Amino acid sequence: MASWCPTGLGDGSHVDKKRKTGLTMGTHSGTFQCDEALGIWLLRRLPKWSGATLVRSRNPEVLAPLDIVIDVGGTYDPQALRFDHHQRGFFETFDGEKGVATKAEEATGKFKTKLSACGLVYKHFGREILQSLYPALQGPRLEAVYVKLYKDMVEGLDAIDNGIEVASEPRYREGTGLSARIGRMNSRWNGPDEDSAMEDKRFEAASQLAGQEFMEQVSYLVECWLPARDLVEAALLKRHQVDPSGELLLFESGGMPWKQHLYELEREHSVDPLVKFVFYQDQAKMWRIQAVTAEGTDFTNRLSLPAPWRGVRDDELSKVAGIEGCCFCHMAGFIGGNKTLEGALAMGRAALKSA
Image (cartoon, one colour):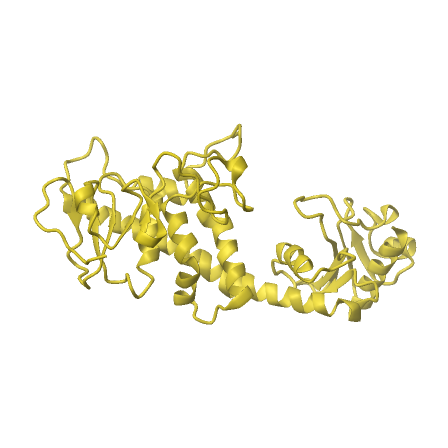
């Protein structure tokens, strides 16, 4: 598509004159939302679009010659680099087959939320964007971050922009999220009149805020969440060295996020039987035994600690369990502690035998 930069526009279209590399990108003018603010920021992470001139307009004649357009224009055509979601009949999802669904129930993938501009940009360019930010991300680790980031951040922004409630009957409204914060960055109806330059300045500030939030999410996933996945996988592959049953998992480090990693890695490695208890040392140097919950639940354990132990502590618990060094067992039977690793593992083996 030919590169082009409009000048002398008098229809409310705005041109960012600071970026001139020959390429052009477009989104709508007027009140902005989180989806296109983040979408433009995401595109700018890619070398091809980092210096592209931004045009904000709703005029089809202005938008037509631009190299890439998001959130306006009434067309979804990845080959033509057109990424709008407002047109009649559009119902694309993050992992669904293109052009198949007309509603959530027909979506072919795992995700059922209709995409907005940021979701469309992330779906088509997300892996490339993540690698531009963290070049070492490759293969399964890249894919894990790509999917996790959509699930934890981008999907919610898609839903909000498309007017999809988080629940059929929300119990309260939450007004501190990214979409709400960016919405408040628009000019106020009862404020002073502002020219297009001020509107563009507000948009750029909103785009930077969206990008800051995105980077916070990415840095956490890559620098904290992903290393935990590596440790969980290492522990999973060595589980038979801990106990022949393969149902006891020993972590080298406590305090890390492990549950979702474990569920996904169990599927990836076709683990059978599933892990029942994990073991780690807490900050007080106590060895913890924690039950693994059934996936999709918060309080339903795959196997709980034995009922006679629950709510019992210290020497009394050691006597009831017949295991030295016991510290406690929670009333709900989901977690307990022992002074030594050997003692904690003995609690786990005893729990397996009691099942």
